[in-house]
Length: 256
Image 1: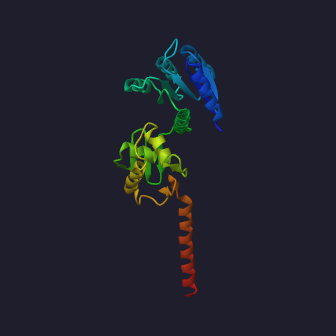
Image 2: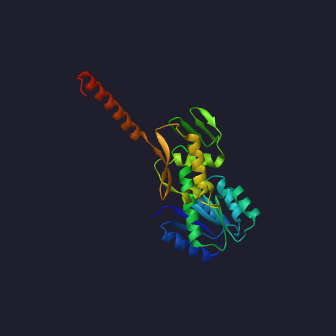
Image 3: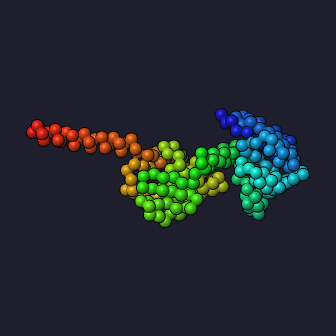
């Protein structure tokens, strides 16, 4: 069950109650606020993990609330609004919102978007908020959008780099294609999930034979994972050593 606290900011009491019921059913704690000024004050006092924020609010509107929260916090914000124009979406995202949902909405979609945004937030809030991952002979730097093999930069399109960074940052974790589309391409991407296969194929072509200590592994019927092969490599070294010892023993005692 989830433990995160969601702050619901909307002046429509019925929508607030509906969201509260669904979110608490999913295991989230909730806090309801019905106006913009109270939203900013309540956020400071309650420090929720995510905000569902309506745009049309009394007092401060949702855009102003988003702007105020972004002055002191990077907690995820999902905008809720009846305005579906591209301009409104772009404005909300530029002010710092993490996602945008147009009313009327499906509560299942809201829950899915909350989970996705929280996953991305948790992934970017590591111990040192690292933007670089290093494996044997491989370095991936998301801040500079550089991938280096044996210290040499390899031209890598942004989405390929984001994909390998995401997989490498979560070694041995299996991701389905839909999860990767959600977490790398974003929830609003409506392309075919097979685009993940194409990007993985291109990455494998770039990284083929670079190291025997890690791999991009296909988990049949599920998706992909980045796997360190340290144990397998160590076992291989042990086998080679055992073979050498055996040969020396046979040679010393003329065993055939």
